[in-house]
Image (tube, rainbow, N blue to C red):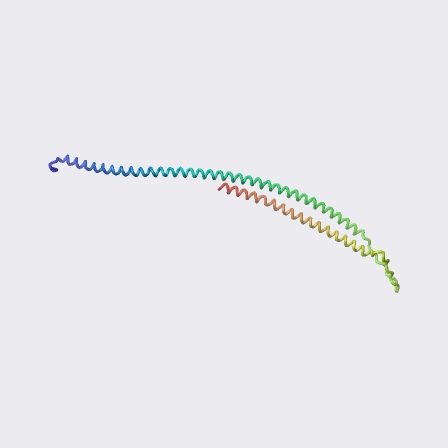
Length: 211
């Protein structure tokens, strides 16, 4: 019977069979694409949710970082103001202490100089001991009266006491000069440390800004 069919119908059947096969392949492809699209939509929704959550976390972290930076900046400003105030007070205290030390040193020096001048005047006014004339030959010397003290011994003790007072005054002047030098050195070190502390503060501030 197939041989009895005209050739046009045979060509139409072949075309119909080919179109039917292509239609079935298209349906299969459409079904597979719909499943893939459904999976992609699910994955897209999950990724959107994750992106939203990550954006919220990033925003919270940024807010925390900004608040921490502002808090650190406030603390740093307060610390810098406190240290500047303390440094100013220390400078003023050092200046006052140095002034008081200089005044006390000048007073002690004036008192010591007055004492030295008095001691020098006392030493200058010391009577010169005159050697007694030699006794005549074969004449025993007369013993001094027991009630009178020996004048040279008293003068020697007086000179020794004056010399000891003079040495004590000189020692006191040397100690005052030494204390004045120590305080001046300490004040100089404190003034030198002030720029170093300011440089450290600026470095810390730049590091905090970079962070």
